[in-house]
Length: 236
Image (cartoon, rainbow, N blue to C red; front, side):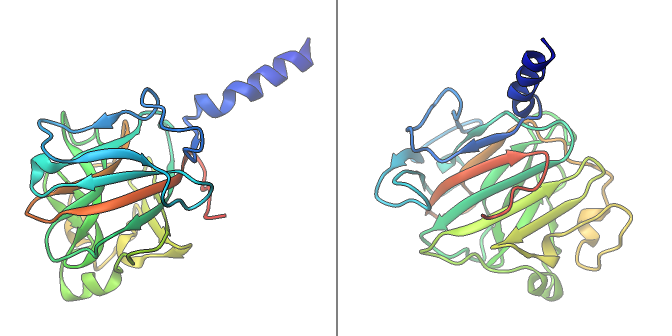
């Protein structure tokens, strides 16, 4: 009896922790991975693509249109209740520009209703944006911009991040930590002055991958081998 109980507990444990792993080789389960476009959706498109993949034959393709209503995302609401670690292999067709865009958006109950924690770009580099006060991580100063990095185009990149219940934010690209996209509770960061002025600690309720542009920028992104866990998954 103990053996059966233990096996049952092990079987359900990943789901109670909100752990998700998806390579889309069985197709696109739109119930588990629904589309998301708050307020409006005009021109953006999500499709299962068998022309390119990080592994296997399938990936998810997002064709993002220009302007806020050109946004479209897909994602999951199976999120761990404490530490949240995300790993996604990403391929972008165009480089990030000086304009503000997002390619990951997360409804964040800590910020209030219909507010999001967003990951994307501005000033040609990767950055976070908190919708409630429009704070960025890093600060978009010369030093802050230099502390982040650009997102390479035309090839698969391993993008990882960690959101801690104490407000910690950590980010890696191809296993390399990005100093400008790091903010730890109780640790001062000269490039995160704007971010750390707020006491908000992210509490995301879903994670969506796609495209949102606050100007005219358009792009195509592919996503594959996505994992959401309470511990770091890594790129391998």
